[in-house]
Image (cartoon, rainbow, N blue to C red; front, side, top):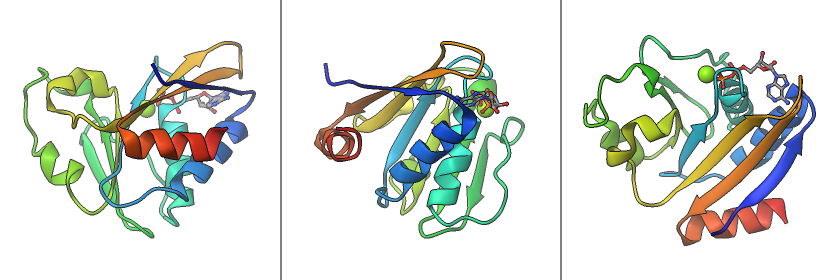
Length: 151
Ligand code: ADP
Ligand code: MG
């Protein structure tokens, strides 16, 4: 299994990592963000937004499930924590196979609807401000991306 581990010692590290990733994203890319509450999923997404040239402040879409932002590429930010069951279809495919970058917080909750190829990023608390960041690419595109970015 292909995995890439990093350590983030403070929010700025997570932010910087996300910006770097964003600069290398292309239309149709899908990123699944996993981790406990407060692990840094939204923080990571904010960094992605900065890296995509989005000037609007990204806030958690907990109540709306999906929020869209305009940048170098559109960013579709989903938080599916409140989706009732894994098959509840809110038109996700339009986003996954659209012309923007889709980021899904708590993605495993809709795992039956996710595309086969995506980049999963797990964030784990490993200290007060320390997080272990684990990249798990599924598909050639994301494997190459991770290799170029993280090794
Ligand atoms: P989630 O979306 O996973 O629930 P958030 O990104 O909303 O998490 O919150 C993460 C919180 O943890 C923020 O208040 C952030 O400032 C803080 N934090 C502390 N250290 C880090 C770190 N290394 N990486 C990301 N966030 C961190
Ligand atoms: Mg969040």
